[in-house]
Length: 158
Ligand SMILES: CC(C)(COP(=O)(O)OP(=O)(O)OC[C@H]1O[C@@H](n2cnc3c(N)ncnc32)[C@H](O)[C@@H]1OP(=O)(O)O)[C@@H](O)C(=O)NCCC(=O)NCCS
Image 1 (tube, rainbow, N blue to C red):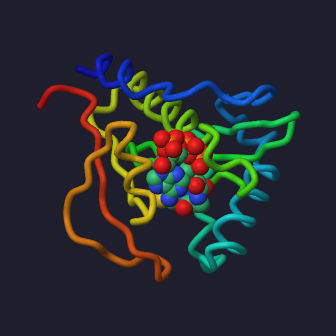
Image 2 (cartoon, protein in one colour):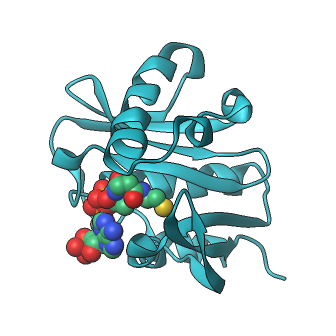
């Protein structure tokens, strides 16, 4: 089941030349990850600073996309299996980086033996997550004044 999901949904398209996707080294990559988060969430989407930074950040798995050695996109997987902080700098959107990072986070969750992955999707991005096999459930709700839906992906048969 899991392998079937990943075969169908990941990777959806080749990455641009020179783009590398890899797990982050939190200690080394944290400043570059923070710069992308600040640009996309705090400055572009007006998320309050005190909602963006979390003390648990360092316990999470992080994933980065680099272009020419510079971090241009990030994603996070918490120990409990919540994917989040999906952010691609504007000039790099629509070129497969977000999908590749999401696929890597799903693969990481599968290898950790998690049964289920969850996320809070901004409503405009529902289609992005659905392409990789996530399913929306429950009502719309607001986080940082942005409409969201809960989504999940089962990694094991229930
Ligand atoms: C949402 C986001 C992470 C997608 O990353 P991306 O690298 O642009 O996405 P990809 O190129 O891998 O895939 C885009 C695909 O998802 C689909 N999609 C659906 N909703 C989308 C959205 N809001 N933004 C981008 N793509 C979206 C596109 O149609 C596209 O499909 P196609 O390749 O068949 O044309 C990126 O646009 C982003 O960082 N947005 C700002 C921050 C944000 O909203 N994060 C999500 C928080 S839940």
